[in-house]
Length: 146
Image (cartoon, rainbow, N blue to C red; front, top):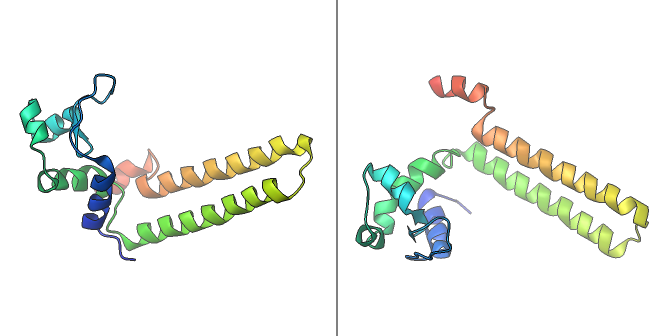
């Protein structure tokens, strides 16, 4: 399946929904997944509720692309391949783990060890994915200058 920005944005907007301004929501006024603060930073000025309610996918698309899609190099086939491999590997690993803890009798004293191994593996994989996508904090500065 070919993933592109438009398909990804459509998927995000399907789950984000429309305008909300719930008093207990720490994000405050939000429409199409965009908080008022993020939109104000994007347009460079303060906005009111009417403008937040008027947001459309066409208006917010460029913001999502620049702030999120381009940051993870979403158009780079190598990055997408890495993410697919990561998901496939993690799916297999977690399925094996769930299978073992469900169907194999693990002594009580070893359950914490199994949890530790899974947690370490997950942490290592997520850290590797972040470093691959975003670069190390020291190296990313020099990569962006090239």
